[in-house]
Image 1 (spheres, rainbow, N blue to C red):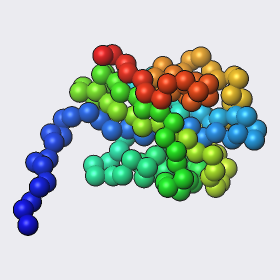
Image 2 (tube, helix red, strand yellow):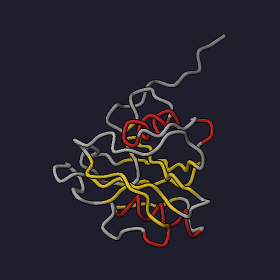
Image 3 (cartoon, helix red, strand yellow):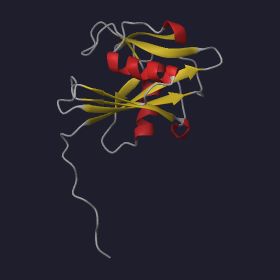
Length: 158
């Protein structure tokens, strides 16, 4: 038997990120975080719970881990559904661009809290009709596309 594995890709390639739309469909609301005043990116802006994948981490595991770290909510990675993909050509920590897989969670356990007050000002439910405008542009676009049945893939900076 011969080894058909490809050589490893360069570590400097595109940054892999996961974001989670926590959608309470019964109440018509979504859970958002507000980045703190000292955030190195988009200080004071609203965003989805989002974060970088650890090296070798499965992207659904990244999404579940980041959601718990930021909001205290627990989701089963297998229950996450893909809601969109953002391919960006820029980023504070991603000089070679980033790929964000946006998931939606419709079921979870726990009550949301600001589990990272050193990073975020608040974690709050918003009615789907009242998503704030001061929002990280790429994730807001993904959220609005999801809510309104728009395109699942967006590109930014290409």
